[in-house]
Structure formats: structure tokens, C-alpha cells
Image 1 (cartoon, rainbow, N blue to C red):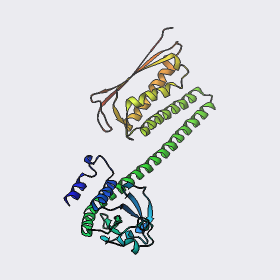
Image 2: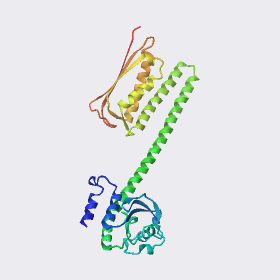
Image 3: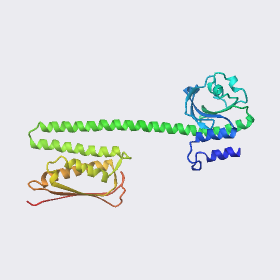
Image 4: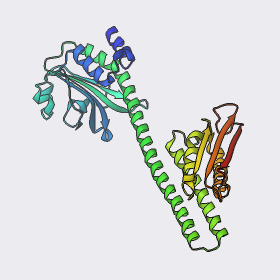
Length: 329
């Protein structure tokens, strides 16, 4: 018994080398009870079928399968605390192919009970020889079944969480795709409307609106690609935004952009107005600062006064400085 308790303490820890718990348990039971076949199953289909989570047969692990419990000793065990057949088990279950093919003689099985009191799995050990000490087999199986049931529930919970995360990821991708399409549609409509107008002031107003939508698209894209959907580093946001804004101006090649942007985190409620302000500043500078000149440069600085790690809701002083200089005619 002490050996089984030690196994349960060691298995699943860093001392076990990170081996799968169920495979370690199957191997341990086969070696300790001197049995030729060990399977650890999860009950599925309302308890009518079982899906193996570990199968150890003649010193080798086999692929996991799903099988019906009908006409098998496991079907007898499921829902009971424990069941033992000391000899002639294949004669008692002539339709069980596994028992017949391995010429099984003895069998012991235990139900794994969930935390709500329902059967969720089972452990079965099968041997080609008559069972020498059925009391020992039952005692060990009862002892390991508690830990095995807990591990089975933990694994199921992890799989459900992974499934939910996958669904969330798919949903986010779909939402991202639709929002991006909608923003592109708005930009396209603004652009088409601007092309149909002859009033320069009206055209400029539509172009400005298009640029503001583009600023929101850049921020949204950065938020989508970040680990946190509420915050993003300003050093990741502003350079891309600046590039998007300047790309639309015919004098972009003659104007050099110099940026000095601190790396700090801001919430989306702060970043959105900053993006719109930067958009207005750069747009006006590109439009008017270099009119009638060969070119020049724009220097953009974003400096946080105080802490470098600012999150949404924090009070901080943020300085966004934009300077322009131009070449003399």
C-alpha cells in the first residue's frame, strides 16, 4: 500500500518527468498486479460506451479507441464500486473479442466516480492467469480510482476550456473581419462621394472624415492582434498610424518623418482621441506646412511624464509634440 501511495504522490509531478498520468497509472497497475492488459476509460454515450484514455497491453501502449460496453465485463463494472472475476472470465463473456483473442483468465475493474456522484469512467485490469490475490487488486484499484477520477474530470475541464477558447477565437476573427469590412465600406463610400463633388471644401471634409475612419481602423487592428483587447502600447500604435496617414499625400516622398515615441500602455478610450489628434496634426502639416516648398521634415514625439506603465483609468500626463521644418526655396 505504501508503494501505491508513493506512486500517487509522485505521478503527475515534476519528479515523474512529466509523463502522462493515465499512461503512468496503466503501466504501474500492470507491473504491480502482474496483469497483461490495463485500460483506463472515460464513459460516453450515456454510459453505454467507453473511450479509452490509456491502454497498456503486453508492455506496450496502444491507440485509444471507443467501444460499446455490451457483452463485456466492463459493462458489468460500470456503475458498481468494483467487480472481480478471479478465473474463466472469457468463458463468462464469450462475445468479448479482446478477452477471447488474449485468452484472458482473470479480470478486475473499478468505476471512476465524478464529483457529483455519477460514474464517469472505469479502470480494468486483465490477466492470462488466474488472479492470485483478488483482495490486493481490489484494494489498489479502489485507492487509485479516486485520483484517476479527479484527473479525468480535470482533463475534461481543460478540454472544455480549450473548446471555448477556440470558439471565442473563431468568433473574434469573424467579428474582426466584419468590422474591418464595414470600415472599408464606409471609407469607400466617402471616397466615391468625394469624387462626385466639385466643391473643394466639401471634398476636403470628406477626405478628413476618411482619414479619421482610417485612424480608428489602425487602432482596432492593433487591439485585435494584441493579447489584451482593452490596451495597447502607444509605440506599436502610432508608427503604423503615421505611416497610414502620410501614405495618402502626394508630397510624402519629399517629407521626412522623424519619430521619438516612448513605450507605454494606454487604454483604448485614451488611444482613440490621441489617434484622432495625431491624424489632424499630421494631415494639416502635410497639407499646409510645405506648400510652395521643396520638402522638409516632421518630428513627432510622444512622451509620458512619470510612470512608463500606464493603464486605462490611471491618471497621467501625456505629451504629444509635433514639429515641422522645411527646406528654404
